[in-house]
Image (cartoon, rainbow, N blue to C red; front, top):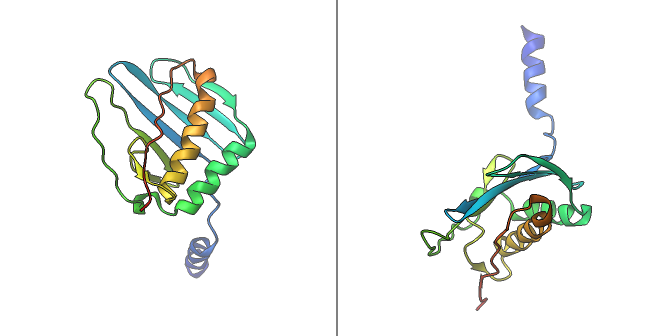
Length: 149
C-alpha cells in the first residue's frame, strides 16, 4: 500500500510533457465548408475539410514553431479576453485554436493591436493561409484589429 501511494504522489509531482499538438478549427459557414488542422511543432499536420477526407501534409517548421511560441506566450487560452463581433448569418464563421486542453476566443473577431490575442491571430492565420493549397478549400481569413490607443 505504501509503495503504491508513494508512486502515485511521485507521478503527480513529475513535470508533465509539453503539449505536442495544436488544433485549428475553422467552423465554415452555410456557403463554405470549414476545416480542422492538427499540427505539431515540427510542421507535421493533418487537414480535415468538413466535406472531405483527412490529408496528411507538412508546413514550414519555422511557421509552426512561431505558432507554438505564440500559444505558450498567450498563457492559458481560457484566460484570454473574450471578443465578440457581428457576423453575417450566411457568411459568418468562427476560428479557434485548441491547445493544452483549452480553446481560444474566436480569432475571426478583432483583437487589440499588440495584444497576445493579436499575435496568436496572426500566427493562426499564417498557418491557415499555408493550408489553403493542401486543403483544396477556400480558406477565409480576416485581418482586423482594434487600434492601440
